[in-house]
Length: 451
Image (cartoon, rainbow, N blue to C red; front, side, top):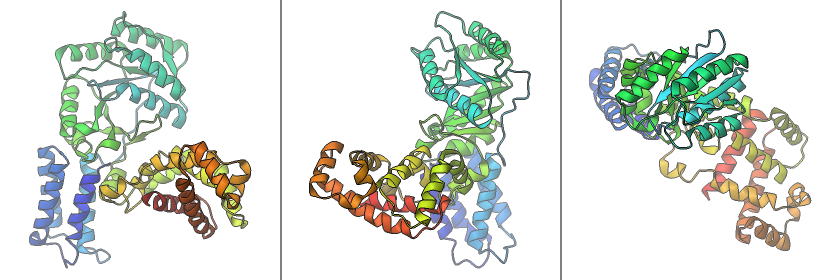
């Protein structure tokens, strides 16, 4: 996420090293590079101009703290402006209403509204303990209603039935009455999209908005559309009383222009950001944390939250106790660590949040993905319980059997065994669990899949 912008900016900051103070002359080149970085990131031009002018005004004549170098001070100023452009702080959903509080999702076709409806429902159910129902008023797109039923089931929330022969407003009004009878806390209404902003779309959305009086009207937009995301958000905000924006597909957005443009252009806060295809890959949008990621400083707070929410604490404690007692790290532990990393969204999402690693070059990141873990998991699952608990017994004939069971060759098994022994040695160095054990596992696993 934001890889291109991160690499550009970190390169710019390196050029500031060795400067004794911030002056108009020595920040001129740096600001030029920042401007190019923002333009390449597809940030809206008015936002770029305002951003550069603001940083320049604050930098020239700025008193540099004794504790910081001029380069660090410049980074601090850029970080502050990034946060300012994106909205200062996270703006939460305002669900203060007689239940059910209605959330209306609007946006163009292909933005990911239906999946986002399920993600948001799951977020409210799991994080805020709300009783949530969802309904689709998209009577135009084939299988849209069935898609929502499927993802709602996966998210564990109630799906209210609708059919293509109904009118969208009738569906919404019936769903609202249904949600009231069921004593739901929240009703999420998924609406139809179009390929572009048009009068029919706006008219229908306005009618839906009037019919259900939502407490939140959220514009769902594809982050990969760059500054076009900001422009369409502005168009919708002029027609609807939008309360916020949800950026989807941010995991595929190498540029970051949408995140940096939406608030400034539309005047509406980004409330959530979609970071993957899984239904738990929806995060509240924290401008300070996103700015930190953009500047290559990671996002430790979000990483810790992921650890607390998605890692099985009981398993983690048992693993820590096992290592403390001096017992060997075995294949069962290895498999458990892989499962924990999958729960956190995979190695890519973890690396993105670790300070310093978000700026790793693309050619390196492309070699660090979750595909090798599938092969490793298959090999471990092909082992007997005895082999997993005591990997030293895995010799010639056993390796052949494991390879056949996993659909790999014996060489792959040999490589796994060699790298596993390296990981065993690394794990012995750790006496505690939590972040240290996880980071150690990440480092070792990353080393494994690079070779």
